Length: 144
Image (cartoon, rainbow, N blue to C red; front, side, top):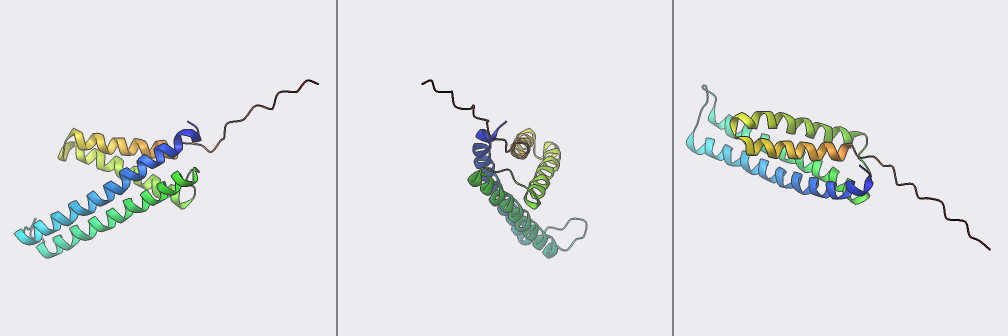
């Protein structure tokens, strides 16, 4: 796959990751509020600690996905593959989506699994594009 397809894929991945960042942060915040209001405790854990942990984890994961989205947005704007630390961050995001996909099949269902696999596939597709530009043929010789 050449650079012609990198830019559209990058735009799609950026939008999906921004949406996922907001969704993950909102979901964890909601879960923290539920734990706090209902005073839910799992195995004797402090409900306040569980609430703060859920909210903090959601914010951290949401910021991580937002960082990934910004990296991918930069890829879309520059039409250049990510390199160095940016590439490592995106590989980490792919691994996170693979692990979340494995967990969501059992806990949430096949729909969430398919979404995670789709995002994983888009990130891997973005990471495997090359920067090789199509070679143009030399101009045809002119006759006098």
